[in-house]
Length: 438
Ligand code: FES
Ligand SMILES: [Fe+2]
Image 1 (spheres, rainbow, N blue to C red):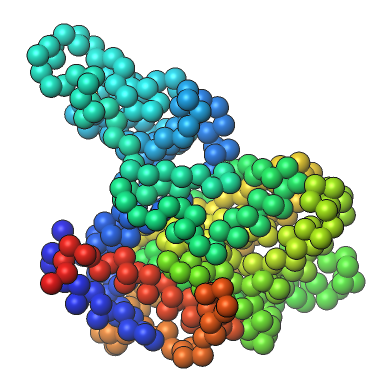
Image 2 (cartoon, rainbow, N blue to C red; image 1 turned 90 degrees about the vertical axis):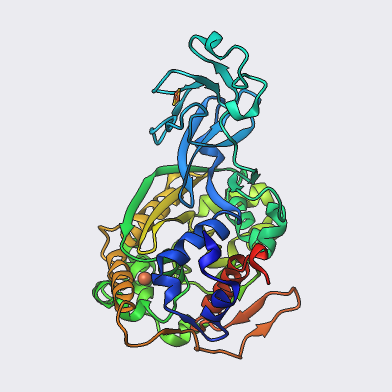
């Protein structure tokens, strides 16, 4: 499939301070991305709270590959391609459910929840053929590698490559921070998923997460009235929705304090000490429970780590301090589904969950007064790039001024294009195929 686009051609699309528009508009590039990025990287596919008991399952996709995620009777999690081993019918179209076995709706072949063939109607028809239980091809094929880190399930279609923790590198600390915010160390997906189809390339959505030059402009119609209304309340009595919207109109100086950190493989985070979420009131009982679980010092450390967004490239962006995540599902070169999910912190009363759900509905929902501003921007970028005006998309802001930290991460002010440049270095590394090397 990739033979028509050479390594040299791919390399030329990504320059140190700009990328060619083809990376967002060319269907051939998109097909290669599905093969070389989404077919190799560790892709976030769900959380173990979605499959609590043996027999629980849900369906999702890895790139364009439909999969079933199950918890089997051995208590392990399996990720199976959603394709019957007989003639290829999808085994289930349910978003989630509970089943001891998977029975194909076409000819009734039955598989266990680890994918092994259990029963064939009139099985003696296969006597003396190679279609028998000893032949692994008669089971449902499993995705090559699955790993769970503190409840987060990732799968990779590549048989070989770094293990999940090595691949995550320093970005793993954002998962740790999210989980450590629960006194019991548990998270649970809750509150439903908001799902929305965008007519834009997946990378445009992902870049928006780290784009601190846009909120004050794009979301002006949301933050300006909120700021006005918030002015009528004493500082400590501002309604939470206003406290959430107002910071979108912060100064560029403030956004610069939300430092951007890149940490390899396309992973990044924004913030640390400053974020647009820092002003929300915090329940004192929640803090007391955390102190009881972790002690004062560790609690301070956990709560003061204020990362605004962490991107685990290419499939999720999550807010570890707010227990919400955005999940990206590429559909076509100009079609992407974004889902937003909310986590409940184990052992914590519902007020904290309320803050997460409110943010999800107020900001991320397509029916929010902020989210659709971004959706319009994605649409305009995808369509603007169709023009013949220029071949290139700029990533020049703060180019050449990145600072390397002692731990190997790289840092820049919040309005830098450092994240976009880093994501495309990872993109290029995935996209250049060893097989095509001259
Ligand atoms: S296609 Fe599934 S049993 Fe025939
Ligand atoms: Fe936005």
